[in-house]
Image 1 (tube, helix red, strand yellow):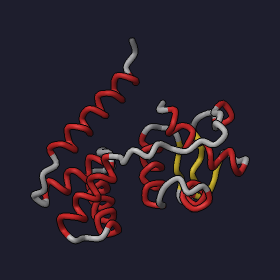
Image 2: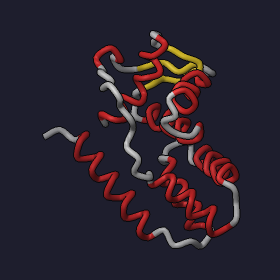
Image 3: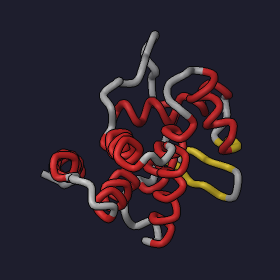
Image 4: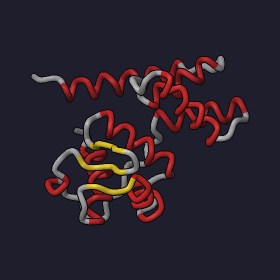
Length: 157
């Protein structure tokens, strides 16, 4: 499990002292309270965490699916600021098409739903950009490297 993601996901639960929260409270805690990312970015984190089995979502409730008490949040922790592939892809589409970030995210959510949520959001955004005729070669190569790195961490030795 990615240590930074583990800290990000555990923090809202630890902050409120609960194992389950309303999704809106989870998003509020990270985006508005701690200012660790936009609400859209936190929603994407939540979707990733669900896909990786870190959380379970049932209606409007999100529950931790791992031992949040075992996660220590370092004093003064701030998430890394490297722009994620997802954000780079969204920025590529908005800069080349004139669409708003909100419009791109809505399109990506629809596309991901049509793919039965089997494809990660960063790949969905790159797919949308490619379908729009945009050059995603460099971003796709980075996304592939990230995927291979995650696969190496997951595979047993």
